[in-house]
Length: 135
Image 1 (tube, one colour):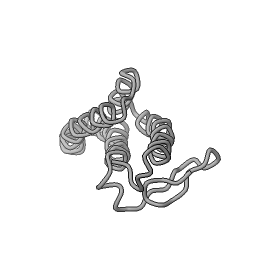
Image 2 (cartoon, helix red, strand yellow):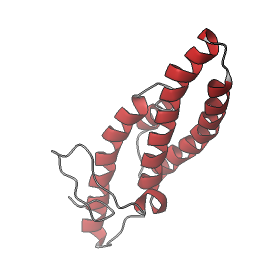
Image 3 (cartoon, one colour):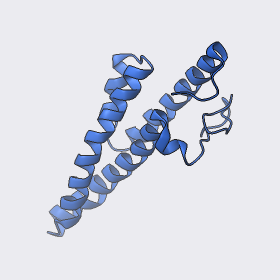
């Protein structure tokens, strides 16, 4: 199946490919980008910032990464809501997508489960409507 950016996504490939511009121009691209950023920030916060704060009395990593994570998490949740409304995802998937922002490593897992589902929907929409690009 063809990804929105012209790359291919098969059941065998773990990472569906997207063009770099699709990470900013499509809802799925924005979701994927934010899932990586929020997930990475959370891992840094939990496994580096919090231990430094409590064990070495060095609060700056937790303070700044925590603030950035909090702001980006709100944007991530809005993006998850956009995907849910646009592609009529079930509320349970929205719950797991939102929970992925505050459970370390879960954002990477949920993104890997959600992306192929939405790429299949893109392909089905294109076959049904004949449009070259998903919305």
